[in-house]
Length: 176
Image (cartoon, rainbow, N blue to C red; front, side, top):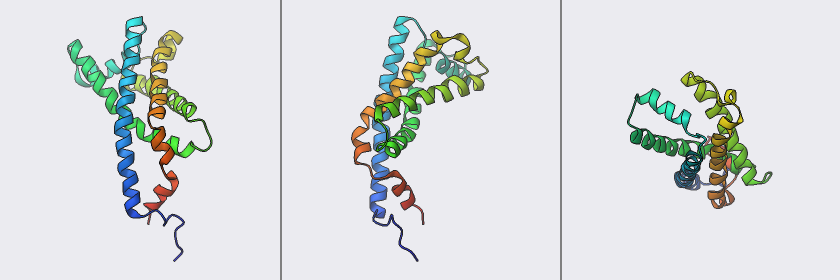
């Protein structure tokens, strides 16, 4: 039987990487969520709403709630989503670190999350019109929030990404 080119990554090191990745997802995802919520707050004070579809989702799932509870759930929703989206962000960053500028990758990732999830899938799931139908004034606040997520997650995880082994090698090392 041929020796795997990835056999130099021990089973222990594979699990260390998984543990470290989970820790990075929790840490960078939480801080990116705080940054996102801060940007939402700035837009809230300035006037344009960056939170409407997120609040609509909470109302559809849990029904009408008091305002304080809706905003608390909105914050919790963004922590959970940030953790879920930080994992693929880290994978993309590790996979592209030798070819592309990381902050640009993070910005593209954040924009893609906005376009795919927030501006298309979420409105369709809620039976709402997409933000694009209202014009740029409705699009840009949430787009900026999602760009902030991608770029903040990238900036916060730069040390982890730099010291991580090749992601393909780690993934293939788990295969028999």
